Image (tube, rainbow, N blue to C red; front, side, top):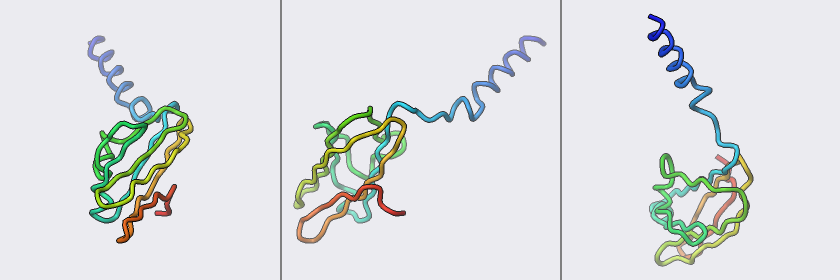
Length: 114
C-alpha cells in the first residue's frame, strides 16, 4: 500500500502544471507571421542555416535561440531577400510580421500589433 501511495505522490509531482509548464529563462523565442500565401511560403534562414517555410515554424518547430545577435534572412522566389540582424534577450520572445508588395519589395515588422 505504501508503494502505491509513493508512486501516486511522485506522479502528482511530476505531472503538476508547475513542474511541466516552466518557461525557459535562458533562450528566447522568435515567432513569424505571414498573411498571404506568398508570405507563408517564404523560406527562413537564421545564422546561415535554413529552418523551413514561414508557415512551418510553430509548435514543435518553433525557433528558440540563445541570447545574442542573430541574422535573420527571409527569401521568396521573385521577391527581394530580406535580411535583418536581431538581438535576443534571455527569456523573452519576439514577433515578426513579414509582408511583400507586388513590386517585389518585402519588409519585416518587429512586434506587430495583433
